[in-house]
Image (cartoon, rainbow, N blue to C red):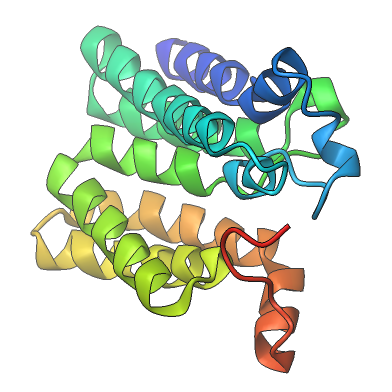
Amino acid sequence: MSLILWTVLGYLLGSIPFGMVIARLLGLGDLRQIGSGNIGATNVLRTGSKRAALATVLLDSGKGALAVLLARYFAGDVAAMLAGGAAFLGHCFPVWLGFRGGKGVATFLGTLIALHWPLGLGACAIWLLTAIISRISSLSALIAAAFAPVLAWAMGRSDLILICLFITALIFIRHKTNITRLLDGSEPRIGRK
């Protein structure tokens, strides 16, 4: 029963659409009508507000981390993995928005940091390095996600490989249109509206 409870709580926490909340509070408009229509930080950045985008990254990653940390504290490591995965699902498929949410990258990174901070920081470093070189957020996310299971294995955390594979697969699915644009050279660069 406890595992189900933490999975549901993780999902509900993950489903809070912080990008939309921040954009509305700051009068930036409805994110679903701006840029890609996504509710995540990259699309918040397209409104022109770097502070709002940063707040979105911090809150979206924070909700993944919080789900993991609370579940681990009260119910152990298995509950933490389930809560983190559920928070990621909640971000991607929030009940409040008709199951049309974000792509989950910040929530993924926050979840990894809370599950095993060296793994999370490794994924963040890969994202950042790729972003600096390519200036393409989606490519950075895809590469960081692809390396997450490998990093988990290399760090001796085979217990985290399955959750990493699950989230990585969903990140690739959520980035389907981005992958098409990457292949045809039309994917927008970071900071471009």
